[in-house]
Image 1 (tube, rainbow, N blue to C red):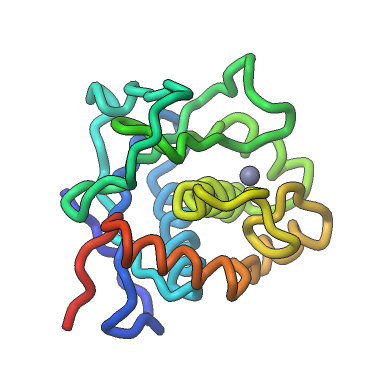
Image 2: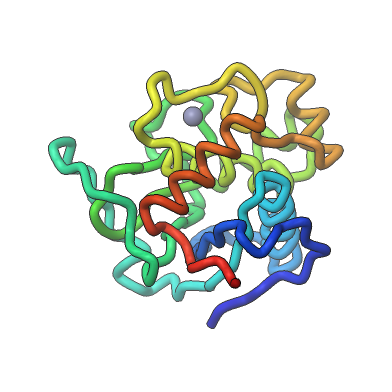
Length: 203
Ligand SMILES: [Zn+2]
């Protein structure tokens, strides 16, 4: 079922739309999950990208399908396909230290973004920020890696695509002011419009 979160949109008719199918395998409340979705929707709206949400069943095979083949480089999924993300309860033992999630930008099927629910909870408590807001920013960052996947280096000097977040960034997150840079936003829109990882903009 598609869920469209009602927000006062600044998106123009020509702005691309990104469908996200979320599998939440963590145990957060429905209210926190909704708050995270609203926050992520707001972050992308500021970047000129409209988000629509679908909720996947946690038992679905797709939620556990990871294409980690290093030799495969697939184009972004087509217009009919959503971007598949998931939140898992426990951080894998082989994850990058302190990372809140990971992405598979070149995956040909299955999950492209995974967020580590326990680590988001832990860092939110340590940094004194709202867990749903931090989860939204972590998700936005990893989705950014998918939409900016040919860029080298993958991180930016400022904004959501910063490689390391510091006190000042957590303050922005808490105040709902952590955003993509204009350059990152433009590059993501270009990817969506050129590679088909979007719904067609309304006319
Ligand atoms: Zn990153």
